[in-house]
Amino acid sequence: MPEWIADLIDALREPLVAFASPHKRVYWPFLASALALAIGFWVVRERRRVGLLSYLFPRAVWWHASARLDYKLLFARAVVRALIFAPLAISATTLAVELATIIRLRVGMAPTSTVPASVVVPSFTVTLFLADDLGRFALHRLMHRVPALWELHKVHHSAEVLTPLSLYRVHPIEAWLNTLRGALTLGVVAGVFVWAFPGRVRAWEVLGVDAIGFVFATLGANLRHSHVRLAFGPVLERLFVSPAQHQIHHSDLREHHDKNFGSALSIWDWMSGSLLIARGDEPLKLGLSSDQKNHRDTVVGVLVDPVAAAARALIAPLRAR
Image (cartoon, rainbow, N blue to C red; front, side, top):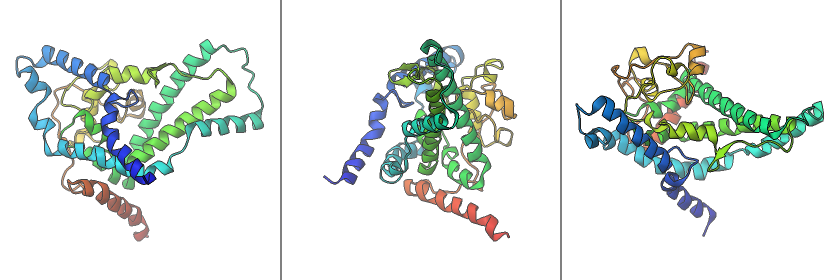
């Protein structure tokens, strides 16, 4: 069997395998914990208004045309990534080793031989989590501020309803940029730690996933892309991104533009002035206005049209000269 056919088959299986992988947000225990939180929210806030099943699985959300497009894009994006973007990946491990070697040659050995692993491991775990979350915030902000990148990011913001699978409603180029960001972050942080603490660098993990990320995924991360308007309150929302805050980020109302870029932590928004505390009942308008939308609501349209729009955004400043 030709290698490209094997890659294609693996890509088509990937969206289904994701539900069994703790490395994926849609790992079934993460979804189960989100479901439990949603049920608790219904008991406290919504049970007098609507029945449980109608609240959790409204047809208007889960079978909306926008959601059905999300389901198709899961497979299409996996195929595009496998056939086009997989060869462009970089190795975080290779980067870490090379960086540690360069620092050692330029600076020498780090004077940290007496620092025990009991200090190095939690320090590395927390540093990596903070660096990764800050990197996500920075790239997300750039996706909104740089015109060509915004044309690609519009795919995600064109969702008219939110489900946990809307997380993957991302243009393949943006997905590749995010993968590159993650590899660079891990490579740089690990490289510095490998130089500073040789032989003692590892992270706290649960099922092979960094422990802090695992906790956040368990504590309702899947509700960010959902209709469950769970807010944490003004104190916690200055530290952690609530589902309601991320839903505000998806709103096309003027007062919600460029707010709440954070992924897990909202401290980056707080420090940069883009934080908006959620009430949990504010009006939202999901999707893009007609003058902002740049693609057809088809798989081909989502994959092709934003690339053309991004190219026009890149060329426009040159034509203006």
